[in-house]
Length: 143
Image (cartoon, rainbow, N blue to C red; front, top):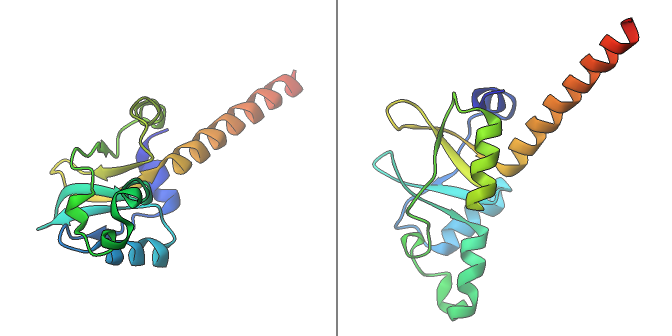
């Protein structure tokens, strides 16, 4: 199964924030959209990704000042992306090895076309395994 199949099932909405947005603004987006991460974009280019984990990791530093800091100060700038033709199994491996939970999906030009979470990947793998199981049970039952 390819990532494009996952995107068809979940949709292509991606929450984005500007690097100049405040952490307070980011938390508003995450809460409103009920998501765990947003892609940081500037001039339609991906410049980072920021998650609720990034916020939590900075709370101990200075919780009072954190809300007014810029997203660019806490985001991950080295963003792992994938293509719509990436096999789900390959992305699952990458996400596990790199310990990342959200991967933006880009087209051939690098334009953002979706985002996939580890939950999306697990759901698609379970669906794929259930389908294979049903095929095998049908094959055995037909004999």
